[in-house]
Image (cartoon, rainbow, N blue to C red):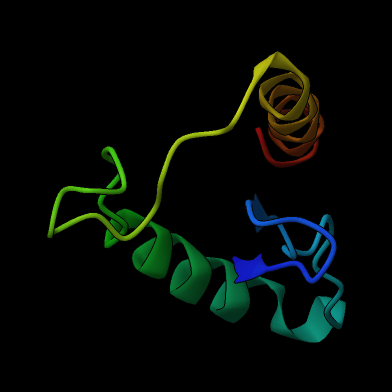
Length: 75
């Protein structure tokens, strides 16, 4: 997250996709899952928070779409 010069609010600057060589898929996936499990989701004012909530239904829907695709590929 970063502050956008056009807006005093936070702007998401996250990647929508991760591209990597198939040769590294299992190693990457294991490392990625381990890192995701370390995230602490909570309101941003909580000191232990490392990941805040989504701002509204639109990004939540997009995340759900990505998860549905991911689950269809990896399940």
